[in-house]
Length: 605
Image (cartoon, rainbow, N blue to C red; front, side, top):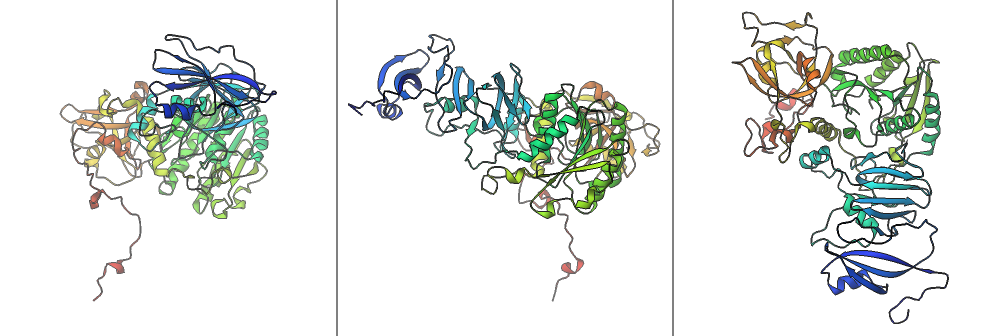
């Protein structure tokens, strides 16, 4: 170093780079930013930024030179180029437009991130969760907390354009569920600081965070054994009658395997596939409390609450615990398998099952496999955990030659960050609440996101049949029990013997009642009963479903799936009637389903 300048080797070349900083920075801040680099020229623009051009010693990286190198004046888009050092030397970030960045992969690399971005493939090969991106086709990728953070998997020479996007779902979840699902870059208190690298500028502009491989976060890293068997399944999915059942305990990667397998099939077959979702507690495409058959024609690039879509057929159970509705669950599975058989065998079928791997859960799994194996063989992919208690017994799948079993290791236990403090999952009840918020988000409106701002559907009470699935309610009180609650939009045969009609009552203001036990009925979605006008014989229903699906509804059922509490208070200026918000109140505590012996109630003298 001479006179404060850096001496460069003859083999090193001088390259120019630009550092974009805010005006009115103090000399100390400017000195720290430009320490070790010789200042050559300093210019000023009218938009509040100062562009400082410096000389930097940088070996030839072998990357193609960019044609756009100058910063234009006025309101034209500005371009700045930096080399990434803190994430990995395998990628280079470039800003091409405001809130638009290009990522060039120098070598094969998995770029994990936290947040949501819109990705467009410019050149090369990039995949996300098994889906190979197509050139000039934009896809939205969601990588949120509560699940393994996703990665942009690029090959050498690939260029990917990342853009910022905002949707109504993001705004609704950030407002109503403030747990930081997509909280990437956040400004620290004390003001807006300059971005010294393009990566930091990208994190600030895109509101995401790019993670290094050695971070303590929960990163998604697939097992190599997965890819070999997935390639084998994808090759056989082209043949008619392809059926694959995904099994395993809770939290060992069934949902991840479902998305990866579906995405790779979509990369090969643009016509799509069918998914039979038989988990009412952790549904992948619909609100909880139902089992459904869904046609998938778009890649699954996020958690379940970002993949909500209308099913081809759905059956309402009203419970997330199938042990409380075993007969209804059996009827629902039979109904969906029969419905799928009528569609033909032109597209592959993937079956998502529950993580109920002990006791009666083993019998339920055997029942599902026997129904699917009646006409064609079935492939079973069984995910195994290191803990034996989280696995199905080996004898569960001994069902003959039609049941072909493949055993794969759990991907969740091999993800980076497993066992660390930052490795955290989302409780099942919170996942269900977020799925419901995602489903009901079309009803919400800013600024307070109250569902009451959307005009309701008006339905004649006399045309409806009402019922409560999970509890016994007197028939005269069922209509009152539905007000202000989440109900399923179902259809029941008008001639069914289960319908009880009131005597000596007006047919316009007295609905029918479904006798217990309530059967498993076809479901068109959910809604919220916002009010009842008995004098006019009208019921007011808030629902995100289309008018055509609501018109097919003649039965409203109340189940164990409850309306998220935040929707009851959203937009309320004061106390909400009949809603207790005091944590110390005994009536606001959840019911404990524990057994207390009578002897414990006797006071000993």
